[in-house]
Image (cartoon, rainbow, N blue to C red; front, side, top):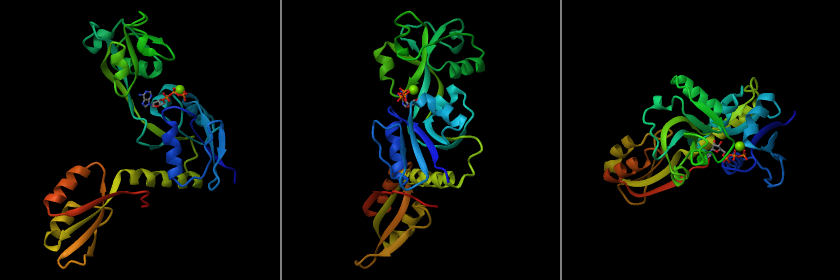
Length: 283
Ligand code: ATP
Ligand code: MG
């Protein structure tokens, strides 16, 4: 059977985490900085390393079967691809930002103003939705300096911490879209058994990342209270300890309510709590 191809970013913000995700799925491949294509030794897959802007197009045209790319790029290129899985990394927000002393106060004040951006399509959709007529100035990079140079009244760009905005005398005004890395596939290929297998592996890695393995000791008389607090993969495993009247409880809890749960467990009499990372969870 012919190998499938997955396109990932060659270098940049998504490269490292895309490579790590595939390695955590048990895929064995070399990741030389110079190579544009590599074959996975233990799975029917080839990996293409590309500029992120090109990934949705390659997948749409079927040159690659799968891709990992930011939602912002998929939406901007308006590519016809399927979203297979949100991947939980590369999170960022596309925002409109204004010079600190801008007179713009409400969204309607953007009427007649010019906005510099590398995301003209996403911005245009947003402006249409709010019936705002502004002049979009498309530039490919260093968007933050446009107002300072007198090119535009505002910008629309990706912001994660806001540090770049601040150092260019800008302030965030409104969120246009949020984004994270997505596993995409070309239309009509989702039934392919290799894709199903890869997707299952990816999902088990993501599930494991969201959860921790917890072991704790508790006096038997407090066990009911502890098990009530723990809704693990199934019910917790309870093992007797050498010391009479004590047990060890093993379970899996979600990262989200981790601290809240740990504190409640301590109050309910849990001792010697050990928290461990999980590599994979197969359902
Ligand atoms: P390429 O050379 O592949 O075209 P790039 O310079 O266009 O790379 P990067 O800056 O590496 O792109 O960002 C890749 C993706 O990472 C973005 O499209 C976005 O989805 C995501 N991302 C997360 N945080 C940020 C951020 N602070 N700024 C820009 N992109 C971010
Ligand atoms: Mg790019």
